[in-house]
Image (tube, helix red, strand yellow):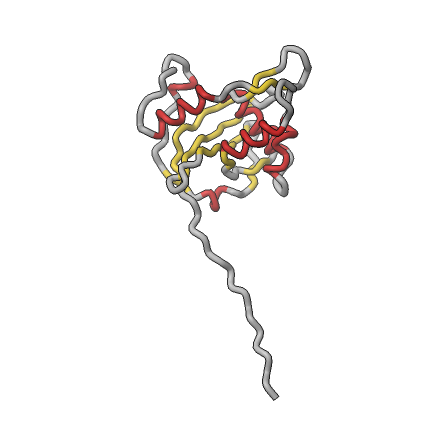
Length: 176
Protein backbone atom coordinates (compact mmCIF):
# COMPACT_ATOMS: atom_id res chain seq x y z
CA UNK A 1 0.00 0.00 0.00
CA UNK A 2 1.34 3.36 -1.01
CA UNK A 3 1.31 6.24 1.42
CA UNK A 4 -0.16 9.51 0.34
CA UNK A 5 2.16 12.42 0.57
CA UNK A 6 0.73 15.68 1.76
CA UNK A 7 1.88 18.90 0.22
CA UNK A 8 2.49 21.60 2.77
CA UNK A 9 2.19 25.08 1.41
CA UNK A 10 5.16 27.22 2.27
CA UNK A 11 4.58 30.91 2.78
CA UNK A 12 5.67 33.02 -0.14
CA UNK A 13 8.16 35.61 1.01
CA UNK A 14 7.89 38.80 -0.97
CA UNK A 15 10.27 41.68 -0.85
CA UNK A 16 8.77 44.44 1.23
CA UNK A 17 8.66 47.65 -0.78
CA UNK A 18 11.08 50.29 0.33
CA UNK A 19 9.46 53.65 0.84
CA UNK A 20 11.58 56.79 0.80
CA UNK A 21 10.01 59.42 3.02
CA UNK A 22 9.84 62.71 1.16
CA UNK A 23 7.94 64.80 3.65
CA UNK A 24 6.78 64.66 7.27
CA UNK A 25 4.38 67.36 8.38
CA UNK A 26 1.71 68.09 10.99
CA UNK A 27 -1.96 68.81 10.33
CA UNK A 28 -5.14 69.15 12.36
CA UNK A 29 -7.64 66.31 12.59
CA UNK A 30 -10.98 66.92 10.88
CA UNK A 31 -12.60 67.67 14.25
CA UNK A 32 -9.75 69.99 15.20
CA UNK A 33 -9.47 68.25 18.57
CA UNK A 34 -6.08 66.72 17.91
CA UNK A 35 -2.97 67.20 15.84
CA UNK A 36 -1.74 64.54 13.43
CA UNK A 37 1.62 64.01 11.78
CA UNK A 38 1.73 62.39 8.37
CA UNK A 39 4.38 61.28 5.93
CA UNK A 40 4.46 61.32 2.16
CA UNK A 41 6.66 58.65 0.64
CA UNK A 42 7.76 57.22 -2.67
CA UNK A 43 8.06 53.48 -3.27
CA UNK A 44 11.50 53.23 -4.85
CA UNK A 45 10.61 50.20 -7.01
CA UNK A 46 7.15 51.09 -8.31
CA UNK A 47 7.45 54.90 -8.00
CA UNK A 48 4.02 54.95 -6.31
CA UNK A 49 3.39 58.01 -4.15
CA UNK A 50 2.08 56.93 -0.76
CA UNK A 51 1.06 58.51 2.50
CA UNK A 52 0.38 57.50 6.05
CA UNK A 53 -0.49 58.96 9.43
CA UNK A 54 2.29 58.40 11.98
CA UNK A 55 1.09 60.14 15.13
CA UNK A 56 -1.96 61.60 16.84
CA UNK A 57 -1.89 63.94 19.82
CA UNK A 58 -5.30 62.62 20.88
CA UNK A 59 -6.35 59.21 22.08
CA UNK A 60 -7.62 57.63 18.84
CA UNK A 61 -5.97 54.48 17.51
CA UNK A 62 -5.10 54.18 13.82
CA UNK A 63 -3.10 52.14 11.36
CA UNK A 64 0.27 53.40 10.19
CA UNK A 65 0.04 51.50 6.93
CA UNK A 66 1.14 53.21 3.75
CA UNK A 67 -1.68 53.86 1.29
CA UNK A 68 -1.13 54.61 -2.38
CA UNK A 69 -2.25 58.05 -3.50
CA UNK A 70 -3.51 56.49 -6.75
CA UNK A 71 -5.82 54.21 -4.72
CA UNK A 72 -7.13 57.22 -2.80
CA UNK A 73 -7.76 59.10 -6.03
CA UNK A 74 -9.56 56.08 -7.52
CA UNK A 75 -11.92 55.94 -4.52
CA UNK A 76 -12.54 59.68 -4.70
CA UNK A 77 -13.33 59.32 -8.41
CA UNK A 78 -15.98 56.66 -7.71
CA UNK A 79 -18.25 59.34 -6.27
CA UNK A 80 -20.41 61.12 -8.87
CA UNK A 81 -18.78 64.23 -10.37
CA UNK A 82 -20.01 67.46 -8.85
CA UNK A 83 -21.24 65.74 -5.68
CA UNK A 84 -19.74 66.24 -2.25
CA UNK A 85 -17.77 63.43 -0.62
CA UNK A 86 -16.91 62.30 2.89
CA UNK A 87 -14.27 60.05 4.42
CA UNK A 88 -16.60 57.09 3.92
CA UNK A 89 -15.35 56.79 0.32
CA UNK A 90 -12.01 55.66 1.80
CA UNK A 91 -13.48 52.96 4.05
CA UNK A 92 -12.72 50.08 1.62
CA UNK A 93 -9.01 50.97 1.78
CA UNK A 94 -8.91 50.41 5.53
CA UNK A 95 -10.93 47.27 6.19
CA UNK A 96 -9.61 45.36 9.17
CA UNK A 97 -7.88 48.31 10.81
CA UNK A 98 -9.04 51.01 13.22
CA UNK A 99 -12.09 52.92 12.04
CA UNK A 100 -10.25 56.15 12.85
CA UNK A 101 -7.74 55.54 10.07
CA UNK A 102 -10.01 56.69 7.22
CA UNK A 103 -10.92 59.86 9.13
CA UNK A 104 -7.31 60.66 9.94
CA UNK A 105 -6.24 60.07 6.33
CA UNK A 106 -9.12 62.33 5.33
CA UNK A 107 -7.63 65.10 7.48
CA UNK A 108 -4.36 64.58 5.59
CA UNK A 109 -6.24 64.92 2.29
CA UNK A 110 -7.78 68.19 3.48
CA UNK A 111 -4.35 69.48 4.48
CA UNK A 112 -2.70 68.28 1.25
CA UNK A 113 -5.39 69.88 -0.91
CA UNK A 114 -7.24 66.85 -2.32
CA UNK A 115 -10.54 67.92 -0.75
CA UNK A 116 -11.91 71.12 0.77
CA UNK A 117 -14.88 71.70 3.08
CA UNK A 118 -18.07 72.20 1.10
CA UNK A 119 -19.59 75.66 1.22
CA UNK A 120 -23.05 74.16 0.72
CA UNK A 121 -23.16 71.02 2.88
CA UNK A 122 -22.03 70.69 6.46
CA UNK A 123 -19.56 67.83 7.11
CA UNK A 124 -19.14 67.26 3.38
CA UNK A 125 -16.23 68.04 1.08
CA UNK A 126 -15.62 69.01 -2.51
CA UNK A 127 -12.86 67.38 -4.50
CA UNK A 128 -10.01 69.68 -5.45
CA UNK A 129 -7.42 69.29 -8.19
CA UNK A 130 -4.42 67.62 -6.49
CA UNK A 131 -1.95 68.91 -9.10
CA UNK A 132 -0.14 71.28 -6.67
CA UNK A 133 0.37 68.39 -4.22
CA UNK A 134 1.64 66.08 -6.96
CA UNK A 135 4.01 68.78 -8.25
CA UNK A 136 5.40 69.24 -4.75
CA UNK A 137 5.91 65.49 -4.40
CA UNK A 138 7.66 65.34 -7.77
CA UNK A 139 9.99 68.17 -6.73
CA UNK A 140 10.74 66.47 -3.41
CA UNK A 141 11.41 63.16 -5.17
CA UNK A 142 13.92 64.92 -7.42
CA UNK A 143 15.61 66.49 -4.39
CA UNK A 144 14.34 69.98 -5.17
CA UNK A 145 12.53 72.38 -2.89
CA UNK A 146 8.82 72.71 -3.63
CA UNK A 147 7.82 75.70 -5.77
CA UNK A 148 5.60 76.98 -2.96
CA UNK A 149 8.45 77.34 -0.45
CA UNK A 150 6.87 80.53 0.89
CA UNK A 151 4.41 78.68 3.12
CA UNK A 152 5.41 77.05 6.40
CA UNK A 153 3.86 73.79 5.19
CA UNK A 154 6.33 73.57 2.33
CA UNK A 155 9.29 74.28 4.64
CA UNK A 156 8.82 71.07 6.62
CA UNK A 157 12.08 69.14 6.69
CA UNK A 158 12.54 66.47 4.09
CA UNK A 159 13.63 63.17 5.55
CA UNK A 160 15.80 61.16 3.20
CA UNK A 161 15.50 57.76 4.80
CA UNK A 162 13.73 54.63 3.69
CA UNK A 163 11.57 52.32 5.66
CA UNK A 164 9.87 49.02 5.10
CA UNK A 165 6.08 49.36 5.49
CA UNK A 166 5.84 45.88 6.96
CA UNK A 167 7.25 47.22 10.21
CA UNK A 168 4.80 50.11 10.27
CA UNK A 169 1.46 48.36 10.01
CA UNK A 170 0.96 48.18 13.76
CA UNK A 171 -1.82 50.20 15.27
CA UNK A 172 -0.50 52.97 17.43
CA UNK A 173 -2.06 54.95 20.21
CA UNK A 174 -0.32 58.24 20.88
CA UNK A 175 0.05 59.56 24.39
CA UNK A 176 -2.24 62.47 25.16
